[in-house]
Amino acid sequence: MKQSENIYLVGLMGAGKTTIGRQLARTLKLPFYDSDKAIEEHTGVDVATIFEFEGEEGFRNREQKMLKQLTELKGIILATGGGAILREENRQLLMKNGFVVYLHCDVDNLLERTRRDFHRPLLNTEEDPRHRLEALLNERKPLYSGSADLTVDTGIMQSKDVVIQILDIYEAIQN
Image 1 (spheres, rainbow, N blue to C red):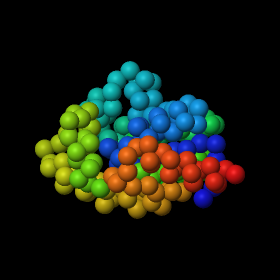
Image 2: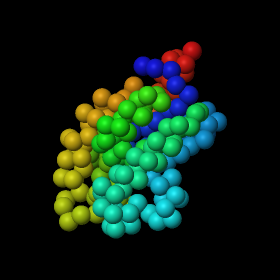
Image 3: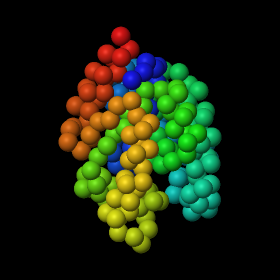
């Protein structure tokens, strides 16, 4: 594990990256960024609209540019989009510039957390959401794990306990 001024959160949609990120930022008194929200603010449209008009590849290109900008900042908490780790360049940016935490969560909890959210382009397909989440997890879990300095299971703990666990390890490394 490495020392870093930044904490980057990776994991599937619904794993708690934004919730945990905000709590970490508040506790550490650091600015919080959500890469998807930053893309939306920069473009003036939501992620679903970008997917609709530019496809996933177009969105991933925008995401890569935004991650490059955000990883140049110092002393931040960043919640990445669930697919940010798909590109090698993104993984390298995250690993080089921050303490990467993989927020893992089982499919049952992910389904429960995302079932009412209609702003998830990769779940808004005709395909069964459970099957889609399982496929995404199978594809991405090795990339999340391989990029992470720490893995925390958010499906078995409340968010405040996840934050405490992350902070305990992060602060031990910083000292």
